[in-house]
Length: 131
Image (cartoon, rainbow, N blue to C red; front, side, top):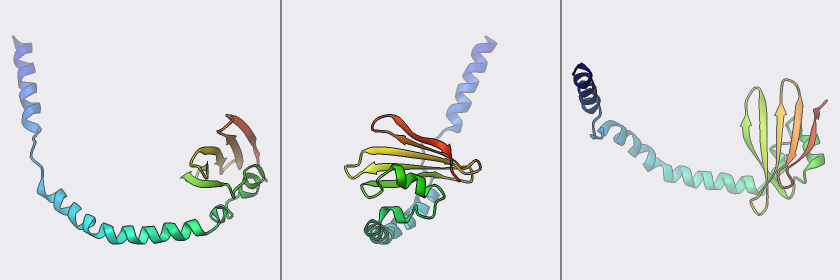
């Protein structure tokens, strides 16, 4: 009997704490940002157009592993996207012009260790420390 009473009280407590009401404050906070989004979208479209006109490897030229990556991957036909870039490592995914993911590079910054993986053939192209 005590277990039944305890479980009923728990159910009532959980039901009372949850409500289906939508608070007005977050909705009002979202509206101004959604109103300013169209102008940001126009700016972002201009930025992406400008980025597409630049050579794809110009972004990666400052990276320590650039020369090694360029020797294994044709950077003119593969577009790189930085997936992770933190203090420990940097992961770059390369896609072909058709949009298929073709290569992946993983660079451990502290050890200066680089891996280049060919995703099309599931093959490791490079695995070593760079100078």
